[in-house]
Length: 290
Length: 208
Image (cartoon, rainbow over all chains, first blue to last red; front, side, top):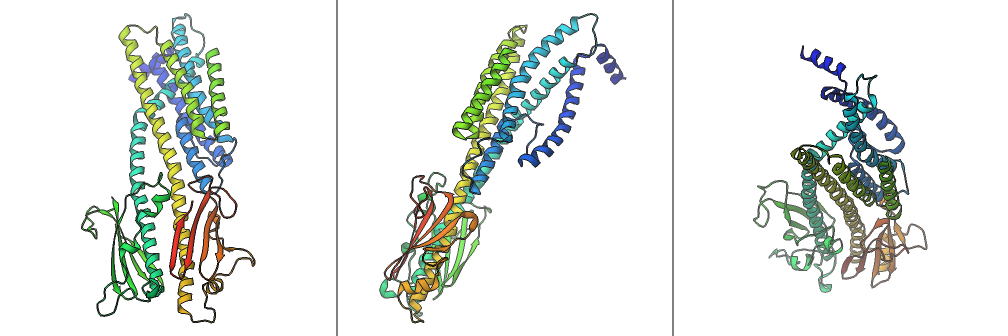
């Protein structure tokens, strides 16, 4: 009954509030269908996953930036002079945020004028389209502004946090590899030349280590010395046990929190990143413990 | 209508001009975004100037300002996040390269030292052991290896003598920290690591 009443109102006044809502919904469905076609064409021609459903030029620009990062990874150091993706980005900047707002302003005025006219002739499709487009862009923009901004901030925080831990693991592993390399080198070098002379023990009786961590461990983290800006690292802690003349256990404790908060580190701390390596003269095995 | 056309032209010129000159997609998008922001502020002020009563006009303007602020936050977040990801991806790339090339160089150095001190063959000098264990890819060159190919990695034996062997591991494509660094193969600014093998041990250095 209520639906019939509303339908009667729309027929009498096609530009009333309910009418505009209906046109906006129809436009949304049309754009949704166009989006499928657009993606099919653009995906195949430009190799670009994108949507026209959400008028978000900054999201597309971010996607292009990541695309450039991947191209750089593959050795394509200079970005293209121009391509279809950039044309699409210009379209996304101009249509929803320059043309549509002006259409809305025109539509609001034209609607007021049209409703005052008597008698009314035909269906005012230009005004309906302008207002539906305006509502469509306004709704999508509000969603992005109010929900997207919060989700974006949260995602950025999570990414940074995860990367900080992974960077710490990378730094720790690089430092440990240097320690292992020095230990393995020492194994082959004779004692009279400063090496361990074929055994990491001083002698089989005392079983004391022939080599010390002070001599093996890097003074400052290896990678952060060279990748300082993208790789800020504090010095890690190392622990070593020589269990046989040719077997050495090395632990590295990082500065960031690892996967398990209850993990007990070698130095008595809890939850920090930790890696263990078992080293022999022939090679090493790595275990990411936390 | 004139204003719309003028803004469209300005946005296009700003975007295209900035992109062509910098090849930087965010600089171009931000330049266009600033022009659009100015246009929208003027448009909103103009379109709401006759809204009555006054509180209604204020509510409209404040609501639009809130959406505008939210969009700006989203925009800046996307900019910061993707720029950070761009840099981070490159740092990861360099980290992977340094770790891999370290492994390659260290492995050659350790095998050489092991062979040198085992002395179970007729060739006893450090250079002889190294040359026996590390044949060149092409005779007469310094090139030892080109793996992994996707990194453009090259390992060169720069100098080989009985007292000292110097190996260089570099990439032909991965950019290092210092753009003006002169690589061993003549390129500029690529990552490069060096390993020195002496009878006393190995010393390793990240050069770029």
